[in-house]
Image (cartoon, rainbow, N blue to C red; front, side, top):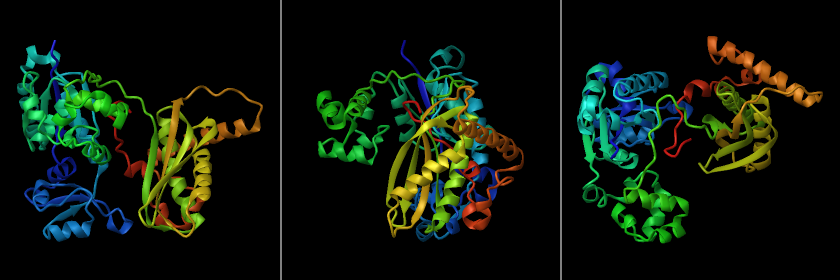
Length: 414
């Protein structure tokens, strides 16, 4: 039985939601942007009016203003976007329980079994577009095809508020002339490698011998070659199934360069508190800690270390991250930003009684932080703070738990 897969993509999601809450912004060039004073001053999302002036995601605010003097900047409200995303998914669930998120603003839907109730895939797409626009005030673009890869490709081809169908009997004439970078997971690095092979379109990739593509790109190359030839049997996961988490991390750009060890310690504590709280919330432990350092020249590098025992407390994460920072920071080059990631995750197991003082101290630390989780959940992340945070209010103002609540989900799971 041929599958019917939809990919629904909310158009200019952040900016569209802001225009719903602020009707006076409709029809104006709007950009959701970070705080320039905290050195987060880049465009995160923009309206179509701003896009018409060539404003791009990632543009610094001064450049966006230069391109579009009338542009209106609004701060992001991730809690609002998360709420709206959940409302949209509730509409999707009226048509199928096979709804799989891909980030905050995109979802795959398998409506193969819904045809008798709601009609063909294109008819269901039209109903979704109409309901989302009427009930929530935002628009979606929907791709309809026989697999997930082409459904996503279709949703990107025509925006906003549009449906694109790539049927199983004649998809080649529409897909193969497209640039190869339109294929999911073909980023700049892969695009450059393919260009050196003389491959610039999806059709050219499909025509290559798979052994040659594997030789140049490895297993990922074979996967991309299969997708270019319409071979994707990956399933849309039911909405109640959570994909396995492979890592948990937070990063931040500091409001000023981190010059002293105290500056780094304050930032690392804030990040490790956030990562550890998320580990405990998902009942996970980490065996590896990865540190990312971005220096004042915007050059980033990563280092990691394996812990003696799996952990989920912030002090152990901090000790490892700080050790990595002291060992690998480049002398004379202040850090502009830091990131901490917990990797090599496993499900938390009941603690075993031990006579060793080190294990007992680690368990007491975890119990203490669990109690702090409850206080912060009720009164806010700043309700209980470390003493070192009081020595520099500007650096200590970062709140990763609140400011970074959107986590990407990979197409291949995790």
